[in-house]
Length: 278
Image (cartoon, rainbow, N blue to C red; front, side, top):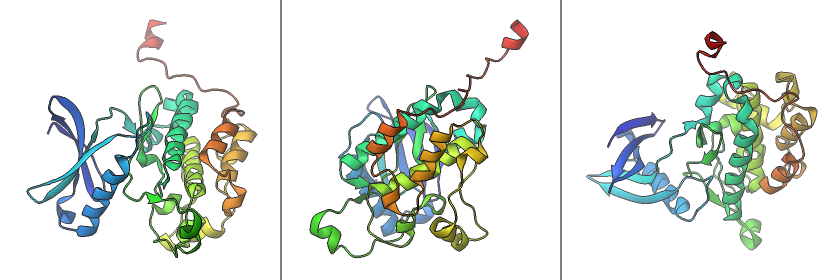
């Protein structure tokens, strides 16, 4: 074990060295280490992750239990969490936004192509390198895309996810497909380009109600430097009816390649001391 990288609600992630290789190790927090459901999520994340192999998706190596502590071992990634990037302000990473969006969407599209819906798409679940390449992480809530008879007779879906990014059909417990992640990715894009969430509420119930019924916010109103075409695309992604959204991340990527994000592309921040040198 080398150092603590980050701490979440139920897990800690540490940098470690295994057989001379830098890896990341994900442990459950002490208070939930005996929670069978949380251990199940960790095991499920490994089961999903070990089926995936893509440059924009984190690699998962193994699940194990040592001295009653469940953990998974995964690829070490030096990038910072996208949520942390957003908190730094768009002026620090705006010039990287086209690359961030493209690579994040490619990772999610690959996940869908392998038959999974992520169900927890949010900035926290992407790691971004200094040159703007994103990797999708955290498959604890990933669910098989139902097709054929299983879609017709599959029943309701357990309501899970992060409230600030949940699609209406996810909140209602309906069957989910890639369009659910398209909605969440639209919420992520709104936050990435505006620095704030598309919906907030005075209570958890109020927040969910807004995802169900409130008018979709217009990104252009929150950031005057985005183009109308890109603002419209983000709005379509957050449509209440899945039929009104891009029908896949592949469709989103094809359209995204035809539009500009910014009216005026932000420049990289000046290196420290440049002004003094001038």
